[in-house]
Amino acid sequence: MTDTDPRFSRILHDHDEIENAAKRIGAQIDHDYAGKTPILVVVLKGAVMWAGDLFKNISIDVEMDFIDIASYHGGIKSTNAITLRTDLTSDVRGHDIILVEDIVDTGLSLQYLISLLTDRGAKSVKTATMLNKQQGHKVAVKADYIGFEISNEFVAGYGLDYQEIWRNLPFIGVVNPEVYS
Ligand SMILES: O=P(O)(O)OC[C@H]1O[C@H](OP(=O)(O)OP(=O)(O)O)[C@H](O)[C@@H]1O
Ligand code: HPA
Image (cartoon, rainbow, N blue to C red; front, side, top):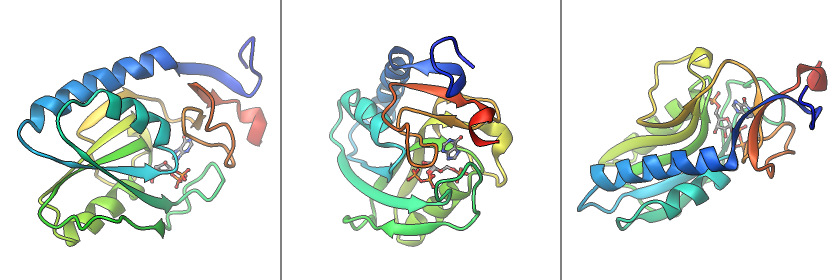
């Protein structure tokens, strides 16, 4: 429990740290995609706040699209079943795609998205995630750009939810296990 907020056992990253990560990754994307116009695909809903920071720190021309998938359905455990709730508007065939994710946890969402876009003929698919929970991975996936490595605990804030709330918080914290036990 933090001194100030009993919902969280500790705060992992504040707004400034997240913005710095977005600057670092934005510069890497500028370098790696110089002369190209990738489509940045924001994975709803969790990646919205991170995507806002990342977009502001990319200088090359990019397109933006959104896809809404769900696997957690409100709880703290992956259901292992991915639902495609709202599809892209772009045709990704022949395009370089950068998936913008808030977190790679089991890796199942990322695995689903990479195979969906590859099957649709994307020229390349890379991933820029705010958080990577390496110890949570159940499948062999690897994000190309990672803001922060985190431990195997349930986190919320900065786009990430606990039962659909707390996405609006301007920091990422470890949810106090007393909240859901
Ligand atoms: O690596 P995984 O175990 O698949 O978890 C990662 C995914 O889980 C969360 O989405 P969720 O399905 O909860 O939907 P949301 O973004 O709308 O909250 C998160 O935004 C990632 O997309
Ligand atoms: O730790 C998490 N917190 C919130 N949403 C998530 N989706 C996957 N892992 C997490």
